[in-house]
Length: 348
Image (cartoon, rainbow, N blue to C red; front, top):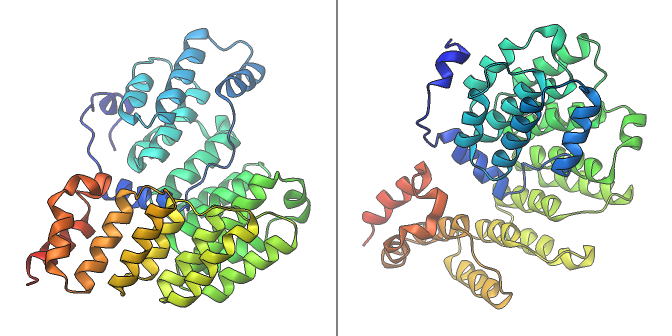
């Protein structure tokens, strides 16, 4: 493995397949922040935990967090590597960069540089998240077990991070087991947002295995317990429909959203379109309905529409979409688009 010093020399950043898959999961609502704190709140917490921490480390941590929030991962990484004496909080912030950017190898390098006795719950949760986002559920689970063996009692954030690892990899059985393993008092004391994330993660894990019945059962359990549904929960229901090719059910699910005081967003519309991609006429109707609802299609929406044109063997329609490849945004270099381009070129 390269040392941290050698990693500091790296400046050229490329978009990996892991990052493309991560963006897809984000668009589907699978990846969700567990705690949304104001930057100044995080800085104040660090000052309370480390009252004698040098100001240059405090400033570097704040800068890294701001750049990470702005998705400028290369600049955030450079801010980290410019510090000669990084402490644990700074390394935790660097782990967060690696998790967001799907830089798992770098994350392990940083992890190895933190003495085991110095690792805290933030270190563990962030490293578990890095494994989750790189679809390494076994390593995430091992870290969760190590965290407990080191005397840290997992809180709801730790459980949610691990559940997310199983959700991203479609490990439904593991997700269900750990969801039911959350201590009752831990769940009861959790914030509403963290309860929503826990249900979202287990639902999406079931959805990725095309198990609509189980996905819906968790939805019913959640709402019956007084935990309000959000857009991500409907994304999970719709994803289960898309995986299982339940076109009619997907429309029924979509139509339920106003009952829960939710206005469908672009991710909801896109997954609905994906559910119907075997029916080009219906997909075009959905695109028209999006326009009527003043919803701007995303690059993923156009990618799914292209898939519908290819499945319908509509060469002219597919090639017309491909004329403006910029509409595919972050997907213009993904494998799925490359495959659909090849298939479109072979259509009459």
